Image 1: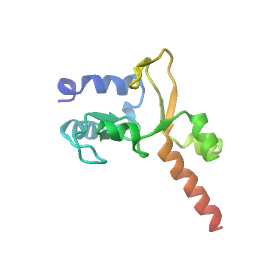
Image 2: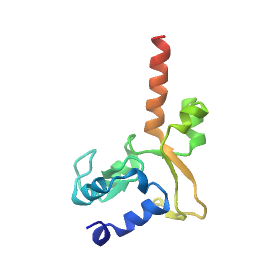
Image 3: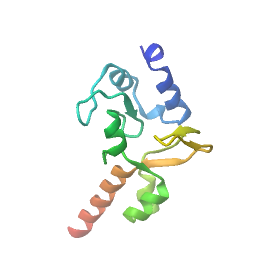
Length: 130
């Protein structure tokens, strides 16, 4: 099933080196699911970092799915190197992305902005209760 219907996604996972973090059963379940995990509409996309099936609008706008460069989240959330290293990341593939068809010729490291915000909140909570 994965090879027949999800070969492009599987190749993307291998090329970005995040395949090791996605169990085959989770991959299969993503292929068998039609609905966006956030809004319930048809989810024609999969967020690789969040590993969620997504509707196009959710992929573009939902805070849980947003990605940024490690340097950007470090500055925005005032993360230490240790905290930054806790974030799951991968390097994008060269290609044409966004609705404006922006061309990216090199690989860019990205992390989950949502995960960074959770780490930041956890640290703030720990500080206020210390």
